[in-house]
Length: 118
Image: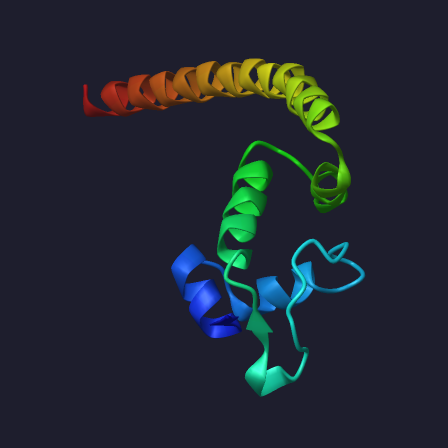
């Protein structure tokens, strides 16, 4: 077993995040063994489960989607991951557009700066 504080330290998440993941709002995607505030403990496998949650969040999964992923069979999990690819591709294009816009703004500001020096 592992304590909430140790699990949080190992995975770089706060106590509040772990509490949220165990709540109704967090879809109970990571439930402790006991819910006593000072002595909340998790199974040893919880670290691996939490790392998967963090990884899924990093690629845009919502907590609801993570919950669905956890209860899905292997085939459904693969489908869920594949459905996320075009979502990320769309965000990639959006971010690329934002990068181009900010570079143009930097160029404009640099030109203004250079005009002020002359």
